[in-house]
Amino acid sequence: MKTVLLVLLALGAVGWGCGKLPDSSGPDPIPENPGPGSPAPAPPVGGANPQPTPTPILGSPSSAPTPDPADDDPSDDPTPDPSPPPPGSSGCGSPTPPEIARVKVKVHLRGPSAWTLDSTALVGPDASYCALIGFTDGRQFCPVRPEGHPEREACETFAVGIAQDTGRAGPTWRRDGSLCRGAPSCENHPENQYFVKAIAGGTYEACPRSGGCGTIDVTR
Image 1 (cartoon, helix red, strand yellow):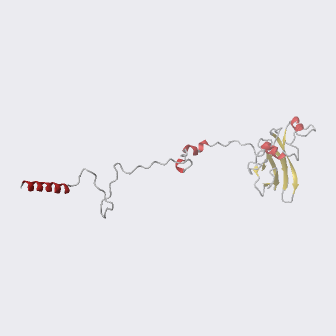
Image 2 (tube, one colour):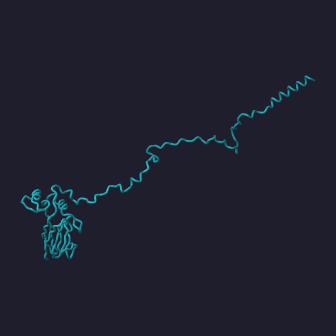
Image 3 (cartoon, helix red, strand yellow):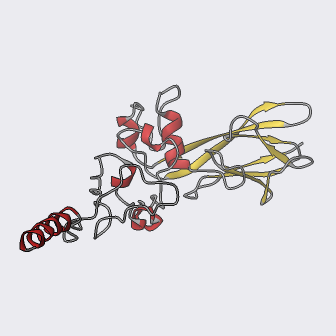
């Protein structure tokens, strides 16, 4: 009887060892093929690995400097010269002519409908200036340059100035004190401000900017 009891106890110990439950202290097994509806694995603590911030490439739009609004300030632009030199004065070399003393006016052409008057601006009295530019006959009054001189036009523009009514280089013409604005009085020449068309008779006057106007009486 004692022997049977011992055999039974031995068999029970063997059965208990074979039915032992697995250790629950280890990690849960991860299924190789999770089925539909299975929850997705949770991301690691702290989220996904942060991506490095790209460094701007030199010359790319993101690295271009921001324009300074002060660069567009028109007050920084250079101010133009409020007193520009007379037109053509840069072509008048030395000696620079003095102010016009008087203007010589004469009849250049007598036409059926109008007479053409001519004017010549004279400087003086200055015999030394006249001799220096080529008039060696001892004259006191002379043109700013001899006829045909390459600087004649530029020096006349410098000394005579601009006509008040036409804006061209040359004297301002008047008949009996009024500007020449066409028939039936008088008309500025279409090509040369030193000429004028005298349509009607009267006292004609050619004035440079410095005064010294020249006059002539026309009877038609």
